[in-house]
Image (cartoon, rainbow, N blue to C red; front, side, top):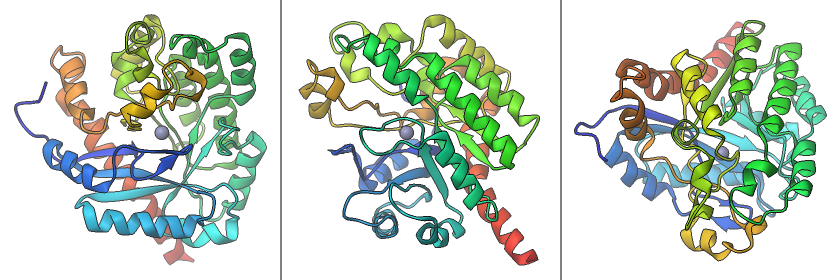
Length: 336
Ligand SMILES: [Zn+2]
């Protein structure tokens, strides 16, 4: 349901747009973003650039920056995922203030980084302290759980990618951030225990932030039962009602720095094509245009959180995350 006023200045820190993921072209590109932004008040996004075969990360970033410049009037902050790119090539890009995005899972698509590799990045980037966004799901646990639970129905996704995988990976990555005093941001937290670990880690090292997405606060795993349940498959999966409820309580208590959509709009035909072959189905759901209105309807209207607090999590804090690192680095280089 649309809001009867248009909020302005929404910053969505986690948006997949205008690229191919795992061989699937995403539904939305920058002209679509502009349209959605005009309708819903999105002033800025954090967009992902994932290295592809045959195109260097530098060249792909330039290409996407050009598309954004020509088609979108808002601000874009870039999160870069290298696959083969070495630090020397990345350095000039990272000096512009962009983030790295690493994954502790997805071996089959080449995105996977081991904890040792993540630690190595922290060591290599110890001077410029590039913020690292991490998709935390422990790959060993996922491999084991997936072997135990074949993917017959959409609900099996919850057993194949259990909360424990997220909790274990979050704990390991937080320990690395503390050990190396390295800024990190944990994306799309879906498990209450993981959010609690982040909060505890922040008291040891302050440049740790995290997000959750509206869909983990609004939906539970029952969404994965029934007619078109496969269209709701995203990673991490929706959790139990108990976990969803706890996640909402943690949000009320300030455990999440920001709310971001993890907008990952695969085309419906790509989702439907693999309805009966779930291991091949691309996991991701749209959420860009509804980030504010869905949170407003589900949590502000029933007085679970205040509108000022929603504004904090969807406008002011993400805006700050999109700009503070650049400033920090420029100040640092001025001092040197
Ligand atoms: Zn994502």
